[in-house]
Structures are given as structure tokens and as C-alpha cells.
Amino acid sequence: MAKLAIGSLGCILFAGLSCGSPSGAALFDRSSSPAPAVAGSSFSVGQAGRAPFTSGGALGDNAGTSNGGSGSGSGSESESPALTAGGALGNAGNGGRVGLDALGGAGSDTTGSAAGATGSAVGSAGNAPGAGGSGASAGGCVIRAGVASALSIYGNDDAGGACSFNLAPPSTGSWFRTDDGTGRSPPSFSAETRNDGSNAHGCYVRSSQSGARDWGGGFGFALNGSGDAPCPYDATVYGGLVVLLKGSTRATQGRDYQPRENTVRVNVVTTETSDVFGSCAPADGKCNDHYGVWCSLTNDWARCEVPFDQLSQRGWGAVKKFIKADLLEIQIVAVRDPKASAKTSWDLAAANVAFYP
Figure 1 (tube, rainbow, N blue to C red):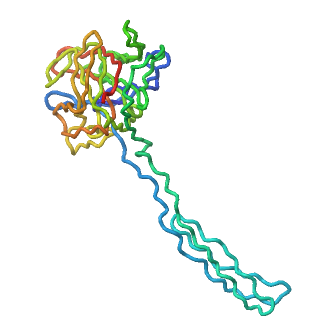
Figure 2 (figure 1 turned 90 degrees about the horizontal axis):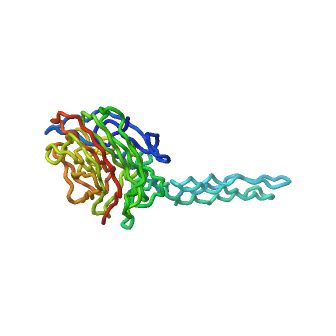
């Protein structure tokens, strides 16, 4: 079973382990407990986050300041003049180098009275910066930012018959599947080549399941990192995203908790609403009430638009601010209607996912 990006959910499938996928497609499964019921007979939906940031190393900041001490030995008459050791090494400044080891000069071979020369090298100032973090947080999480000219997320390019679950650069994430673990069998999940007789060639992701009786299920993708350890993705340069969807759902909810078949919820998970990898805590209220939109499904590909400035929470959880710089995952899920007598089922497909300015 799989990590949930949906609250405390059932199973999520990531690139990594085989699950009936086509050759070259890798999958990963993860599990967690069912999501708790919430006000309005709804269920909490999904999740991901990040660990605290680490700072880069400090600069060496103090120059070495200690001079070597004065030489103090006296030469004595002998066949060869004696050398006396010079002063002590200069103390190292913070981050600096130690003083040079200077020797005192020779005592006079006639009077044996010349003092050794003073050691004089001063430790040099430390000047190399520490190895700084590049937006990194604990556990090796690196924040990545979207590029205005890079809009494609998945499925917009001709795959040449070798589709996978990986997203297009600069995104580094991949697709996963998620469900509540109560279905009749593990959900199907595959990445397939799209060729529907039009000019739209490329890849699409598909998942189906029947018999779910908890919260439902679907699939999603992490924009940065894997689905079981997503990192923040800064989408500030984008106005939203669009995805082509088709398929069907049964015994599901729509807007305002009303029964609505052939409908999915597209959640935009951020660190603010997530309690798994994010900053939402029980003291804030109920977590995982993510921002998102509802989209209808048909048997043909239809455009589902997700404008970042028009998203809303469902209303049963802690009120949080939507911040485009803190995106973690996009989830496309069939949300079970808890009042339905029938069990929930879905057959979902997604293609041509892209940001727009």
C-alpha cells in the first residue's frame, strides 16, 4: 500500500516498484491509516511537506591577531654558534591560518649574547565561506523554482512509445497513486502512450478501482522529489495549471458536499495545509483541507483549469493562506460520498499537464 498525499490515506504508488505498469514504468507503494471523518460528513484529503531549512556555513570572521613571542636564548661560545628557537607560533584567528614558525638568529660566537630574533608572522584572516545550503532543508530537501519559459509538466511531448511516471524538467517529481485501501483489489495504475487520432501524441496516466468504502482515491504527482518525500516547489511565476481529464466516478461528492458522480477534486497541496511534510499542526485545527477546484469528467478528454488565484479550501479544516512558493503535490481524487449506499469506484486518466503564465 502507499503513502498518502491525501490526509491519512490508504495507498500511494510512486515511481519505483512494478505494479502492472508498461515496460520502463516504475512504481512505488506506500500506506497509512484512513482519513478521519470531518464536519459535514467529509473526509480530510492529502498531504506532504518539508523539514526546517539549514543555513550555510559561517565565514571565517576574525583575523589572526597573536604575534610570535620574542626569542630569548643566549648563544654560547663553541666551535659553531648555537641557534636559539624564535618565539611561539602566532595564534590562529577564527577561520585563519596559524602564524609562521620563525627561528631566532644565531648568538654571537664571540660574546654569546645576541638574542634570538622575534617570531613575527601573524595568522592570516579566515576568508573562505562555509559550504552554504542552496535552499536546502534537513534530509537533503532542495527547493526548486519554476521557470517562466518551462510550462510543460507531463504528457505534452511525443514519448516514442516509452512512457514513464516522471515529470518534465525542471520538475523533478513523479506520479503516484492513492486510495483508502478498502477496494476489492489494488487499484490499476499505468503510464500509457496517447494516440487518439489527433495531433495530441504523448503520455497519459490512468488508474481505476472499485469497492472503496472510506474516502476514495485517485492519483497525483509531486512537483519536486518523490511522492513519499516531496519538497517545496516555487510556482510564483505561474498563474495556474491545466490538465486534460477523462473517465468516470460513482458514489462521489462534488462542491458543497453534494452527491456528484463523474466528478473529481484537484487539490493543490502546500506546506501550509499539510501535516505530514508541512507546517500544519493539530493546534491549528484540522489539517489537510487543501486548496483546490472541482472538475467534471466525460468519456472524452476535457480541459480542467486550476487558476491559483481562484482556489478555495473545502471549509472543514484550519483556514490557511495559499502560497504559490510552497507547492508540494497536485492530487486528482474521487472523493467518496459518505451518504451513498453504493461503494465508490473510479476510472481516471490525465494527460497534457502544464502550467500557464
